Amino acid sequence: PSATVPCLQNDSWGKQYSHALFKAMSHMLCIGYGQQAPEGMTDVWLTMLSMIVGATCYAMFIGHATALIQSLDSSRRQYQEKYKQVEQYMSFHKLPGDTRQRIHEYYEHRYQGKMFDEENILGELSEPLKEEIINFNCRNLVANMPLFANADPNFVTAMLTKLRFEVFQPGDFIIREGTVGKKMYFIQHGVVSILTKGNKETKLSDGSYFGEICLLTRGRRTASVRADTYCRLYSLSVDNFNEVLEEYPMMRRAFETVAMDRLDRIGEE
Image (cartoon, rainbow, N blue to C red; front, side, top):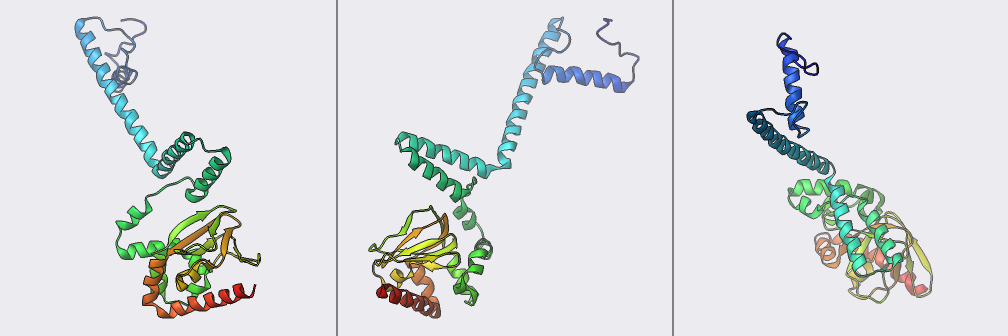
C-alpha cells in the first residue's frame, strides 16, 4: 500500500469506520473525488453518483439553513422587504431628500424595525383572547387616562377594541380647524398643542384626549391640533364613537362635560 494511504485491515473497527466515513464525506460534502482519483470505470461511475448525491444534499442543507435563519426573525425580514418597496417607490417618483428622510423616520418610529399583520392575527383569535391582548397592549394608555380610571371595565374594553394606532411626527397637523371631524384621538405618548383663533396654545400630553367636540356636535373642527413631538396616538372613528356611547350614556355625558368646558375656553379667547 501507498505511504499516504494507511493500511486498515488489521486496525480496529472504529478506525476503519472513521476512515470510511471521512472518505464518504470528502466525496459528498466537498463534491470531489476525495484523496484518490477513481481508477476503474466502476469507481468512476460510483464517484459521479456520490458527487450528485452530495451536491443534492449540500443544496438541501443550504436551503434549510437559509430558511431557518429567515424564520428566526420573519417580522424584521417582512419590514425590510416592505421598506425596500417604499424606497423604490420614492425613487420612482423622485421625491425630494427631506421628504424621503421624513418617510424613513416615520417607518422607524411606526414599526420599529418589525412588521406584523396584526389585524389578521387578532382576527383569527377568539374574542376573549383578542380582548385580553388589546387590554394588555393598551395598559399604559388606560393607566394614564383619568377617563378610564373609574369607568366600567366593559366600556373600556369596548373602546379599546375599536381604537386604531397612529404615529405623527413633530410639526404634523393632526387636526385642522374648519375641517369636518371624523375621528377623535387618545394620547398614549407625546405632546400636542391645541391652537385656537386667538393664537393661544394649550398643551396636552400622555393620558389626554382631543377631537371629541366635533363628534358630539357633528360640526366642523373648532381648533387645530399640532404634534410637538413624535406622538403615538389611538384614533376612534365617529361611527365607533357613537356605537359605544349608545351603550354607555353616562360616558357620553362625561365626554360632553369636557367638551363644553373646552368650548367655553375657546369662546373666551
